[in-house]
Length: 326
Image (cartoon, rainbow, N blue to C red):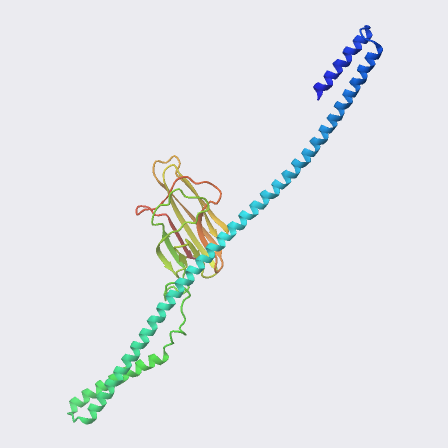
């Protein structure tokens, strides 16, 4: 646009010089000046139209920027919703696994109780039959004083044994009314205990982001509250718990991990072997208050990248441990 204006000005000056030196007639100069003025008017009009178009383009660009910002915020909200849904799904899967384990345990206890009850009834019937037989033999047989005394003592012992057994059966609660622990191992030593220790049975190659680690080999699981299929521990009751996790990484790699309660990160650890010539191990420990039903698990960082493999072998074990402090 500036070039057009400059050209028009040069043309005007040229004709003005011609007019001064008499190289053109007055009418011709006026016509040319009129044409130049019209040309300048057209150029100004085009320049104004161009400015108007630029204003419209700027307005459209602003609208597109606003829509882009809205779509980005919406996408972030959807990602958070999906992440929350995944956490809830893992929590539900852990609860389902615990319920299945509890159901299997209760069925086995019920079967054992019914078997014991039938055995006790059969044993009592046998003792009562023996007692009646001994009474009949005592009435129909004449025995010497020493022999009679021995049989009488035998009968008294059997009678006392039968009475004790019958009393135990009468006082023993039925299998349906017996109070059982909700899940896991029944232990008189740990009535309210909760402790577990598990490790990975094999390496995990090319570990990804936001990956829940499954420590699939269980060493200790008092209360059966750790689920090896989901890698999650479900708190049986409110209290203060201690959790530790240990990672091994191959040389030149690094893994960022987190300890999560439901969807809240309560601990973080960097296992870094860059610059090392051999594998290295790091351990994280967290003391945290949790509520009944809370799900605790170890995952890789959801956004940061990871390099290398998570190692676990008979010589070194990547593990996850926890216990109720009080």
